Each structure stands twice: as C-alpha cells, then as structure tokens.
Amino acid sequence: MKMLKLGGYINILIAVAHIICLLNADYFFEITGVGGNMRKNAEIHPLLPYAMTVFVAVIFLIFGLYGLSGAGKIKELPLLRIGVFTIAAIYLLRGIIGSIINIGFESSFLWYHLLFSLCALGIGLLFLLGGLKAFQQNTSL
Image (cartoon, rainbow, N blue to C red; front, side, top):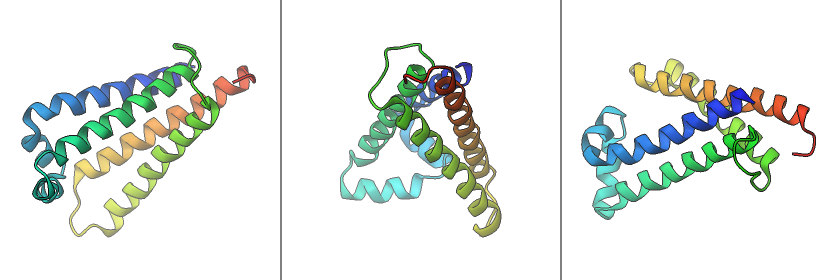
C-alpha cells in the first residue's frame, strides 16, 4: 500500500508542477524539450499549449487519485483494479520504450529524456508492485 500511496502522491506532485510551470511556460517548454512542438501548437491557437498542459496535469491528477484510492487513502474509485494496472502499464511502456529510443535511436543523447523514462519506469513499478500487494491483501477491490 505504501508503494501505491507514493505513486499517487508523485503523480499529484507532477500535476501541480505542470500547473505551476505554466507561470513561465516558454522556459519550461524549452528545458523539457517540447518547446518546438508547443510553438507549432501555438500557431494553431495561442492557448493550445496551455490547454494541453492543463489536460496532461488532469491526467496526472487522476493517476494520483487512483494510486491513493488503491492505497486506501481515499474512497474507492470506479474500476480501481483495472485503473491501477492500466496506469502501471502506461508508465512501464513509457519507461521502457522511451529508454530504448533515447539510448538506441536518437541522433544525440539527451540526459533528461532518459531521466524522464527512468522516472516513468520507477512510477510504473510503484503502481505494479503496489497494486499486486494491495489487491492480493484485499480481493474485494
């Protein structure tokens, strides 16, 4: 349960960080490597990069709430077991595929791409192992 709780809180922290970073969006878009894509999106509509960031923050918040729900810290959310393991799969795939692409296929190694992938892998393991432990202890979830 501690792993799911930690994974949940990490996701909520990531969601809050996305919103805070909007205060200096151009800078944070650049340092995270999405500046070019966000400039293209801004050509479509000036608010699109901000809307996309808020959308991503909401997804992280939902992931966080599922982690906390699986840990028993908040009320049980719908499809909790499926949600926790789907979140684990998303993070694990992001971590594994991102690492492979960064190390093997990118023309230049970018340390922060690998760092983001390793973080995703870690969070995925928190959800996977935490979910296995939580649902093994409480088969009603």
